[in-house]
Length: 366
Image 1: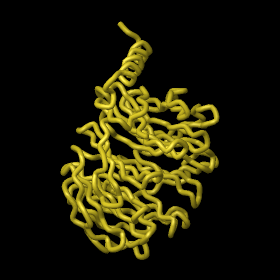
Image 2 (image 1 turned 45 degrees about the vertical axis):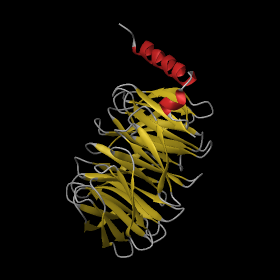
Image 3 (image 1 turned 180 degrees about the vertical axis):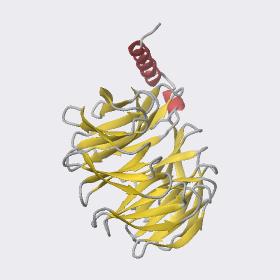
Image 4 (image 1 turned 90 degrees about the horizontal axis):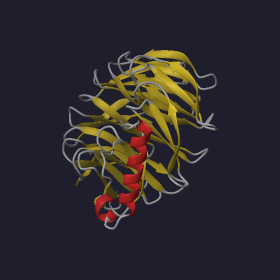
């Protein structure tokens, strides 16, 4: 029986042969420059500007792959907890934080030598995280505990647990008021946490059905909420934390991205093979763009102002020209694209996906 190392070496050789073979442009799309084998089922990526490495959370391997981006190779596989779900870079200490969903912990990776220096116990089923630049704390959404754990990154210890709504699944920071907003999928609310006042819960805002994604728009100081089951996006005015508009989009809005080139909001509608474009000036529907099947991930590329859309069933990336909101090109990544990350050091987009549900890879588009 082949060892896991032998299987990974065979996979690497197969991928190298494919990439160097004639006709590879037709298989992968002519924008894919590298394919990097990682752990099983990679579902999150983050760029570390202190060393220019990309980190990939491999859910089924319980590892984080460290990709050295000068030559796009894995230089280390870091063992963390069970089912690593999300990654956050902390510029205060240059550490990478990893939520381990099935362990109820957050692993802290020291990035000088890429080793785990601490496992912090948080609530039950921790998924999403964010870094708060106003206080250098890490906020962790615990889905089953219905709480937010606050980790003081000076000592990497939990200093507060904040009760929020049911099933908190996403977080967003608003630099205009230093508030953290929490999307509660099970209670159809957004919780507002005042981080400058001892992390106090100050409001629960009623939105649409199953809010699952948040994005702040600095051009109008609004927060946008994707309500999956309602097929709507709620616009929250951060001045008084009230809903000012509910924009009807299409089926299953899943992910939101802000485009600073035009100040518009882009919404991936998983159930409709489309991206809705919301005008940032008045929070009304501007356009609907047809993309691939089941779009679930999006990324704004500051090097070309395009919006990249990961279509998980089509195994492709749709690249939207934000000047006219049309699909400029589509790139086949030959995997289920689950997460996207931009690397400003080489201006490449990294795509986390899986070949068979077990073998994982990261494709590089440039």
